[in-house]
Amino acid sequence: MAKNRKNQAAAIRFGPALKAFFLCLLIAGSAVGYVWQKSQVYLLGKQIRETESRLTQLERNNQMLGDQLADLRSPVKLDQRARNLGLVPAQPAQVVRLSESPWVSSDKNNFARQLAARPVGVTPQ
Image (cartoon, rainbow, N blue to C red; front, side):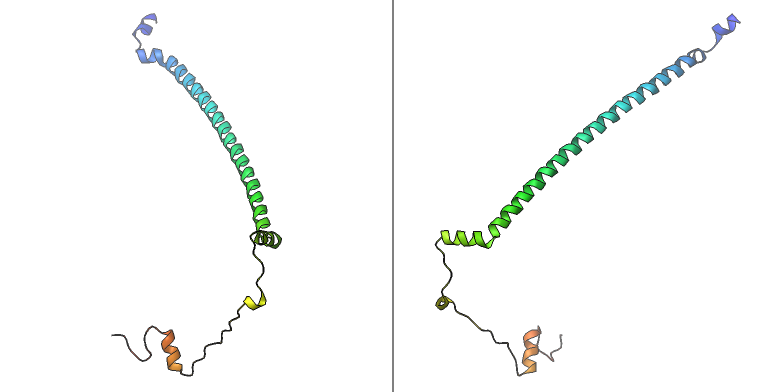
């Protein structure tokens, strides 16, 4: 039997060693994948926290600007700013009121010509 072992092919003798090597490679690859995945989860969590912090800051800034806009639009503040510029309300004699009478046409063809792009009764060529 000793003679048979010496004559066996090299692939058969290294078979268990190859199996052990591939098993170690699988375990090492899984470990590296696990560590990479955990680092990605950590990085994504960090990005989420930074984005949420930025969102909170922008919401506070938006609220502050909204309050400032409401303050600038308030009639009391507008009146104060106008008085600081030397502006006063108009006197009744300074106001000119224009009345606009509705336009009524007695000629229906004239009314249709004003609204249409071409005169009534003309056919396109």
